[in-house]
Image (cartoon, rainbow, N blue to C red; front, side, top):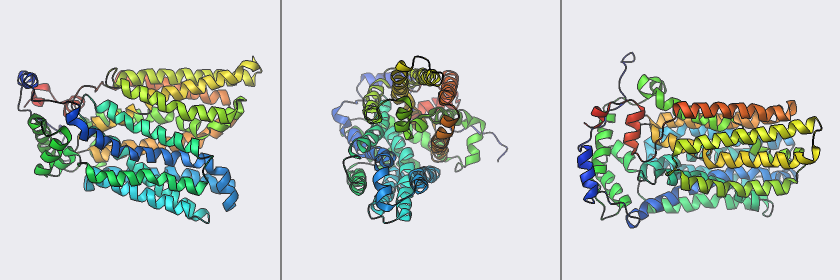
Length: 482
């Protein structure tokens, strides 16, 4: 069995392209705005998990001085409090796929919310470092699960023409969560900020009672009646969902004939392309240095001789607008185009910042150095937010067949969080070694990302999930139509 090379799945379709076109012309695939209000509501509820994700990331920066003073923490103790979030997120990433497959997408979001609420309450009542660390670890775990299940849930409920934009809202809400913590953190006491940060989970827990489960997950576990009801609820009472239901059912039935996927199954020839795309994009996203720059943004502005409060405020607001622009473009320009533009901008931003630090170290045009560094940082962050921040998660949610989505999603999410830890851990060491050298290294990594995207990553806009997965996993067109 292990030595046998098998095709990952065969999708059976009941209609030819001409039949499908006739049905479209006859109005069987009606997707009016009125019929999709439940899709929008479901997306609205789920992305509060993304806002919670951002709140977790943004909490430690504005509260450092107040927490260390009140609880008499050393710098080392606070560093543990800040970084243990990533450890919890990696554990959450490892288990996220299995949990979402076992108890469903809504069940995974409920569980993540419970962990985050418990974590914030532990932080709120903390009297010492241990309670802080336990709370931070719990919120990190919930955040790690959210980072996988939210984009997957949105991708599985959204029509193909809206999937990119709706899934990108995941990153937009992360940016909103981070920015909100940055902006109100200096105003609220740190305990009050902890209470404020648990409200997104409360909103999600209430909202989950009013939205359906992912139809594709219901089909996977064999709940046919619930699957059909959920699909009808999402698309509206007047929509004809028979063809969509048949395509999902046929695909799922083919997948159910395969054994439960394990980690080593991902490296079979049939899945290797999609795994390469998913893992490769997460490597490009994280090893280009973004979290090192963001985690220590204030200190970078201090090094540049630019007012840190002003710089931090600008960088808190910029991602919201740029991510919104990316969300509006992703289903028009496409995933691949946004990634290429984003990676190119990252190279430019790194080059500008690196050149400015080089000028500072060699005392060249010193009066221009602060403006050039800030310009480079803003170009870098803006370029990341328009594509590289959100699109890898969109593509990850699209490319894996549902029988391997759990284990494959856990792997890619783990790679992302491991990259976050590496970037944030090594940034200060690299900056102490060479400020300009750090940004030139990031420029090279982002340059390699351009090559990877251009040669390996396919365009997925305007296709159903089943069509994307059939194409990436090299299923012949005649078999795809069976």
